Every structure is written in structure tokens, then in C-alpha cells.
Length: 435
Image 1 (spheres, rainbow, N blue to C red):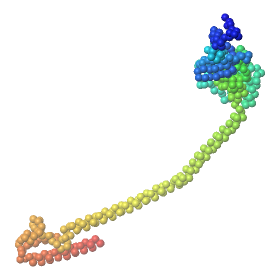
Image 2 (image 1 turned 135 degrees about the vertical axis):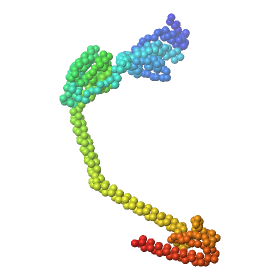
Image 3 (image 1 turned 90 degrees about the horizontal axis):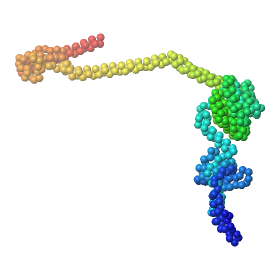
Image 4 (image 1 turned 180 degrees about the vertical axis):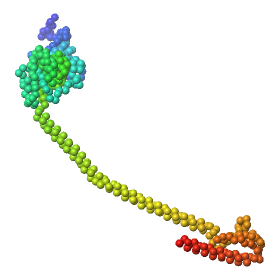
């Protein structure tokens, strides 16, 4: 029912705002196609300005951050999107906004989202594993080139490869590089080259184009065919920013067809220069080894031992002679010291010997039993005893006290005679010793 108002009976603004909120609240959620004109992320919430694709109509929208992050492709300003939203009227400010519940990329964004899902599935199967990449030969005997007929990519690959290595052999297989039948044509060409034993590497080359033009090179069938290929495959699709799934599964990715030719075919001038430098380094290394060994031999030959081996014997002979002289000197010194020690001991023995005392004119009186008489009382009158002199002994008889003087004189005379005989015998011994 329409609201009846007049200039005399106007409706309050709050009533109009409440009615608008009720009218808009009865609208259900709708799918809206638009372009993201502005995007602001806040903690927990995102505020988006949606603009019509053909008109200048725009409207504010909001959503939770998790809703925006759940999109299969990142949503940025300028993205074409389809949103599932419910209109929401804010009464205090009288503003209308769309409360987004789901957001999806549209057009190119949708294609990118599909490719991203396909990429994740194939990567999970291990088709993009770097460890499974096959190495390309240093100088391929034959190169299989898959490209469009009379295309710039074909000319770039052939011209650059021939310029780098004039004798290179390139076999060209033309195929559709665009359209719905392009993927199957490339698959057949890859299978044909893989079965040819004279082909060492396969190049799939195409110039740049839109994302829709390059979609055949992200075909799952083509990706699996290249993965199963035994021959190394080089992907040269589009330009540097273009990354179809073929680039990920190929053994080598080239940014352009020209880069593919430079990557696969070596430069003959660089190889010749490398050979020349290697030859020079090898020659210098051999000459250095010979010079070092010759210097070592010269050093060995110049040593005194090898220059005159007799020097070693002579030096050792000098050492032996020195040791011999030293040993003789030590032995002579030891003999002299021992001789002196014996002389000293002999002198002491002689000095302590009773015979030396007797030689000085003394005598020893011994009783018949061998006892030495030390007092006169032991020699009574008529006592027979033996008087031991330096040169021998005589038998004597004691006459007692009356005959003491006579006995004393007799003893003195006997001692004197004994001393004279001792001197005579010593002189005779010295004469014999001198003779």
C-alpha cells in the first residue's frame, strides 16, 4: 500500500528510512556481474566498490575477509567478478550496500582459476617434479620442431640455430597452434618425434598471444603426453610472462623461440674458442708439471750426497776417528787414575805393615808358643825365644837381669847387622830392577 502524504501531512524521514529498509529487506540474495573498482581490506572486513561493466553505475559492497580469500583466484582492482550478495540498507545513514556472501572471478579470471586448479592436481601427481627432468644433449643429432606453418617462431628457431651451428639438422612438423584442435595436433606431432630415434630433442614453439590463444598448451592431455615422452622436450610458448602448463612439464622452458634455439644448439664460435682455451690450459698445465719435476730432479742432483757420495763416507769416517781418539783418551785417563789409586793403596799398606817397622831397626820377640813378648818379665833367665828381624829370625836365650846390658848390646848388634843386611838386599834389588 502506497504511503499517503501531503505538504500539510508529510512523513518523518525515519519512517521513510524504515520503509526503505523493509522494502529492500524483502529482496533476496542475487547474483551480480560487475567489475571491482576499489578494494580496501580492513581487519576482518573488506569494502569493495562494484562498477557495471558497460555503464557508469557503481554500488558499495562489503564482505568478510574469509569470503574474499576463498576465491580460487586473487581478487584485485579491475577484476571481473560475479558475486552472490544480498542488498542491505543502513538506516542511520541511509546508505545502501551489498553484503557479499560469495565471490568468483569471471572471464579471464575464471580461466586462470581453472588453470590453477588443474595445475595443483597435476602437481600433486608429480608431473612437474624437477627430479624427473631429462637433460638435453650437448650437440643434438636431430631436432624436432613443432610449430605453426610459416610462423615467426619457425623462422626464429631455424635462423638462430643455423647461425649458431651451420650443420644442425632440424626436422619441422607443422601443427595447429591455436583453436580447439590444436592440443590433439601437437600431441600427435610429439608422439611422432618421440618414436623417431634420430631426433634427440623436441621443441614446441609458438609466438605470443592472449591467454585464450595459449589455452591449448595447458591441455591436460598434452601435459600427460609430454610427461610420458622419452625424448627431452623444450617448451617455447609465448613470451616471458606467459606460463602455460606445458612450460612446467617440459624438461626445459625457453622464454621465447629464439631462446629455445640458443639453449639447445651450441655456438660453434664459442665451442672453438673453448677448445682453444682448453688446449692452451692443458699445454700450460703439462709444461708446468714438467718444469716442476725437472726442478725437483735438479734439486736432488745438486745435493752433496748425490753429487759426491764419498762425502757421506768421509764424514762418517771422521766421526769414527774422533770417537776412537776420544775413547783412547778416556781409557788412558782411567788407567792412569787406577794406577795412582793402586800406588796410594800400596803406600798405605806398606806404611801399616809390621815389616816396615822391622826395616827401621826394630825386632819382635816371640815365645815358643808364638806369643809376642811385650814385657821383660816374660823373658826370665834361661827362657828361649825367637827374635824376628827384618830379613828373618834368630833364636835367642834370656840370661835374666845380670845379663841385661850384655843382652841389650847383643840385641843392638843383631839389629844393626840386620839393618845392614836389609840395606844391602834393597840395593841389590834396585840394581836388578834397573837392569
